[in-house]
Length: 371
Image 1: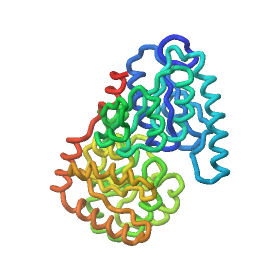
Image 2: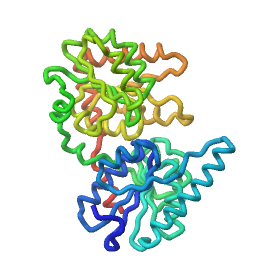
Image 3: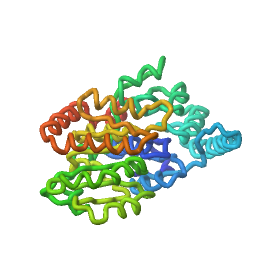
Image 4: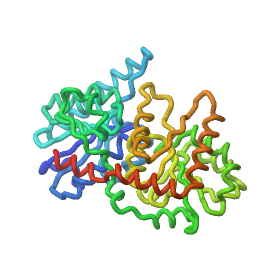
């Protein structure tokens, strides 16, 4: 990677952060730029959240956290939002100004994207957006008016960007999804070769409700102890609680706070349980894995449910509702779905085939070709 202070070549500025779902698609596109080896430089504008630094520090790309914060209904928070937006805008504009003639801004959504897009438009820098959720977030809906083109994962997203240039490409995934190493995951996590793998994931930050549901049904999974093992990505905040709960279990259970090589881990899995973030379901499909999706229940637009429904309609997933009024019901429904898949190989094979039919690993290249 060339440093951003290089004056030759094209300069790509990515804007997005706060969750892995805003960063990983951008990284996938950045990989395509790097592979072209054309002298271009890459810089990420991200949020100040810990997860952003954790992901980007391992990527090798330069990144600059912005002080921007999310919008809130609280009068005090609204004032803070405006102040930080303005502060971020002028900071970004200072970075972009000397490079504006050969620059491109690519936004992936979230509150960090706004000041970067505003600065780019003020300087006449072309802006592109990547939207991977079925239902676009507020930032992408507002910022689409400034974009030359919007790249989306699903055809269902097109109506949200009326009168905009929209291209359906899928979700950009890291190049490792084209040749994942199942052996690497087995080796690094000390998995048993003779057993199938149930993967539980709460995405980059973990999911407390999924963790709690799994903890409550652990005794019921012992009937699968001879043939199955569990890998549970708990999130950094929940690792100790889960490790305490699995002490003395008969079924082999690996609790891990975070694992950055999802292509290899999904290649090792036989069934995956997780949220239905746009990147997650794209990864499940690309890996060809039968999935049990528990959509995040606190979003007003319920967009994760709509993401998961794409997999369900294709025959690649089962939806289990995360019932916020009854955690016991969530756990029971999850257990039913797990028994259905863990005990039925033919169903797993059929769902895997359906997942592969809709999965793609070429979206990143399509975006770069379009640019």
